[in-house]
Image (cartoon, rainbow over all chains, first blue to last red; front, side, top):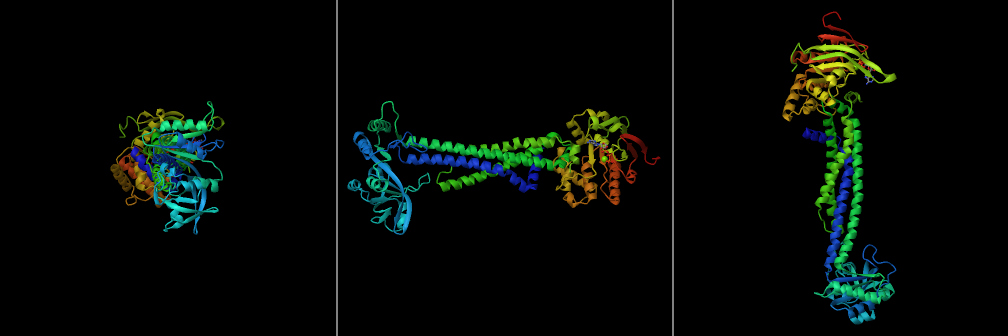
Length: 402
Length: 238
Ligand SMILES: Nc1ncnc2c1ncn2[C@@H]1O[C@H](COP(=O)(O)OP(=O)(O)OP(=O)(O)O)[C@@H](O)[C@H]1O
Ligand SMILES: [Mg+2]
């Protein structure tokens, strides 16, 4: 009987193919949205972790403001100065590099081409702390740093976009009103797992950027690379202590800066993406519920439309529960079909979008299974009421129905 | 199946009454109907419009319950059965033919006829064979795959009859089976019903307005104002 009811419902669905499709559309979209959101969210979280892990475990990042995260740093917290970097280097042992960093988004012009990018003002230490290797030319030296000369090292994307196949070293790029000599080309790092292009960068002496672009002495970030074998925890504590002194923070005041190692940053960022994933997933789940109401609507219409048929079935001896199960199974088949299409759609969308966003595609069996089970459950819940109504019809009146 | 002939009649109505509505709107459609039908009989029910013919057919067909009186089917008190029990009684003992055919639309003749067997839980091959045989019996071989829309009124009624007899019911209940058909086709359908009554021993209860159709029956019961007015064997004085 169950098998028959199943065949029957499939026939009924085929008979009204367009209507069935439109009915399940809500479920299809709901399931696809839930799975895609969660899959992409998980991928993004993984990407964040991967990228930060690739910086190495011995990197400490010092920023003004209390905590790294969404909208990191409060506006009121004072920026650092070059002297802070010097103080760290002078007073704390076991360090490989200490790089003060400022950055600014600008449009760079060379020959007839222009390209929007981000300029990083820093010292030679930056190449060590961020694992940059040189492809061609050289990095800036101490005298160029001190003089704030207009020299720069560019990434591969800049070379491609501005110089094409030509050798950029020795060439010139223009930023706003000043020209800058290209003295080096970075070895390509490729796209980051976050989707941002790591080679889309221009590195200049700190002083050059401060004078010509930011117009102040501020340093936004200090990147501190710890020697292998030296405890990052200990260095972290020492930097905190030193910065509290330098920033004259009283004993009972909170830090107005933060020192984080890459692991902590990864955790903070992935916690943020997790929250986003949950939120988006919840929104998508609501759409799934709306899809369920759509199913109920159509099933109610279907019951009214098929009143005579139900009368015939009851007259020839169908039991109430047989009619009930027929309509219930129809609703479940309809919604599960929608769920199945949704799962397939979500897989395609997730693979496509994660490719576009440059994040890993992580197949999540539990979300797929759960969404599918939920769609089937929606069929049961929203199919029950119409089915109940069909089954309890009076056969005589049902037969008389036009 | 029709069992101990003689001792227990197939159908026995005793003082059956049926009241519709309540209070002011109360209406007595049946007011104490007594009727006994033996196995193998072919009974025509006649009477003016509103006399309660369809009402008594619905009660006989276990689609409705009487307000009073007793209905014994093979000695069982039907008026005391629950809704599912009545459904099972319909499933196993009764077949219906309606004035409006009442076939499933957009469904082949074959599938329409298989429907009652589906609810009896018969296997696919058994259903298939039985439905084909029933369709052949009503003269519709070769039309198995036609949907109601592709069949004439007479053919549709034949499909309905095939559906009613495919389970080999004890009783065939037909409420104005020829009401929607022209006279030639009506006679063909009556010939078919007579043949089924004679050859398969199916008891037939048929409501009709046309005296012509009633002549096919062994016995004619006249209803008037919710009561049996006359009950005579054909050939005797009406
Ligand atoms: N569900 C109902 N509710 C109220 N009154 C009803 C209902 N069904 C039938 N009746 C009334 O009961 C009476 C008998 O109806 P019934 O359908 O049995 O007549 P009938 O003899 O079959 O008439 P016809 O030859 O026109 O089909 C009618 O007066 C009808 O109005
Ligand atoms: Mg009637």
